Length: 144
Image 1: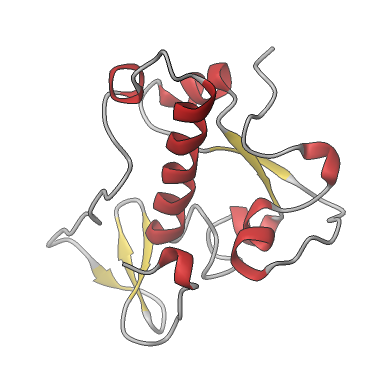
Image 2: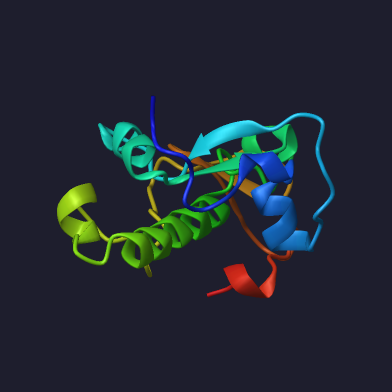
């Protein structure tokens, strides 16, 4: 069994992104666990170090909302940066870059010539959707 989250307490019944993006602290009837750092072997490290949050389905699953962590690269990067900050606070003796093989802070969005227009105001990327134009306005905490 993995470590309890150091980022978010599931017992609160809140969605991490509802709180951070909208100030919505209401209890949700359904929450899904999201490992903040994913990728090759990193999901297991997220579990080991407690870098996970609990999300309502709209904020977790691609296609349910433009704010879904699996569909919006800026929001995913925001959660990754919050995970790195939590890791550095709770494990000051460890180097995040050494454990996870990189740094999430200030990571640029991947741009790729294979991007295809997908939904109104969004563009498909290999790992999700990014917002284009003024269709989706990010909260101040997610702006460049």
